[in-house]
Length: 351
Image (cartoon, rainbow, N blue to C red; front, side, top):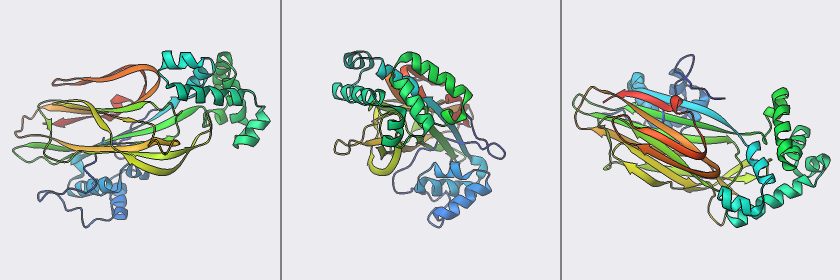
């Protein structure tokens, strides 16, 4: 399911790029120091945004956005998309591949491939009753996991079961879920253009932990450039992932990492980060994160340009993420990625 939220009856969500751990304020902009997090939540609601939209942001970013909403709500745009990704297909691939095939064809580390196969084989040898008792699975989860773990034809059969059974569709086995948000705040003056960009994301439902590298691509048009003199906030938050293959759930946050810039240009940036947390926390996986910066032009052109962003979640196989720069840059995804709906996180602004 993919949907964009609009302000009012359908809430519009914009990609917010976080501006360092410490909130930055400017003399010409509203003072955020007098607003509490609870007050910021009320301001969001008063402006037509839901609690779910509000909770997407870090505390600092939520307060910062609330100050802009107080000053002029028409200068704040928030867009969001919720994506549901199929996890059964990946589990079926593991079940039907050898360890060597997982390493050579799907770029899995040898130790990880061995671990995957052992988990699949253990589940395929268990009865449905044993899966329920051992892992706390529901009857529906036990049926579908057993089917998928024992072969490709059974994966197709289980997908057919899903279409006729809402319980299966809600299963933690069948899908992962990502909420991806982009927010823009116009802080321009009469002589220059400037925008705060905040992008945030959260896997509300767990994905299969392949331990690959995910990416966030952000691009903007015209002659706007990233403010390199200002802060560039980049955080990814790792949480404990509990359970076994097909029956994972999120636990407490364990650590914070910093996405690295894998490529960048005058009007784009691609930031990447491993989904596996620190080595000493083997069950720690990337759950959420936030990126924030400013784009600006020392003059006003009056041109309409777009700002767009996309989450790229790596799955089995080769793949790449790139941006074609230009007045209207394009984000390009090749190969094995589950991606957010770009149309739902693209905003037109005036340079």
